[in-house]
Image (cartoon, rainbow, N blue to C red):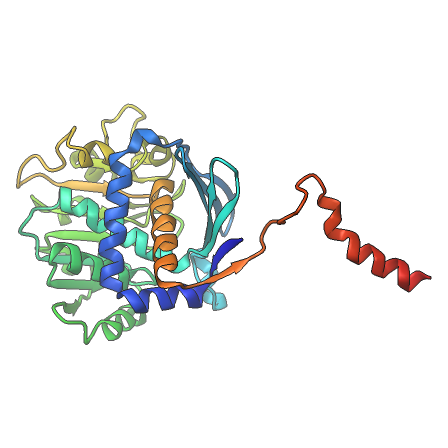
Length: 348
């Protein structure tokens, strides 16, 4: 049998554990898997692009588990009353191929993205960082805000979105959240001025320049989350040229990240090298660091592994017959025998 986790199950799981605990524990699962980077079979995600969006498959595996995620990105969906990003995923046993988990991943992706962002900032932001500008206040913004508060101690978050209702939504959702002071800004420039960290998580599929060079101050850490497909960026090229750039998986980031603006030989560092101590993240307090995050399949592997472990521990979800369970594994046709007999009786 395969454990099945739907949206209601995942919501129950988070309610039982607490969102902050889930973010902390998921970040640790991600960290542990980045530490064993070389154990994984890796590839850039497979993407099918259309004028209005993209549908992607994201696989990753080690010697024990195979994971994949189906995910879309359609910015115009909100005008149709639908989410921009929707996802589901699966875990399988490498030795047998048996599917172990089939799970929703829309909520899970929001959590794993926020957990990855905050984990990277632990290595790249100044340790005394206490303020963050959050540009783009859509469906992932609350998760980013809570993750940075929980994992880094961010106390003040300045909000800006082209849609004032999005900022109002975020402010209302987190109004009673202890320890976070929210400020709605009138422009990107106002939001980022003096901030220790800037997170950009916008949705439009376009070569955008959300941040321009004059906005960037020494010592800032930039968490660029929204640029995640070809033809979609958020930062002016000059910012990328001058910053210390950290990516998840260079072959994928060259296609989809902020560094798609840069020459193929421009220097970057992969995040796993920072996590295992091979290369320093931040070299000095005045350096501008950039986590050019597009989301990578190992993070989904970690998130699915976490969901399965917690679901088992809390007995959440259901067991479904996703694949046949046969007395004779060579007799698949036996599954149809009752149905065949019924048809023959009706014809008689």
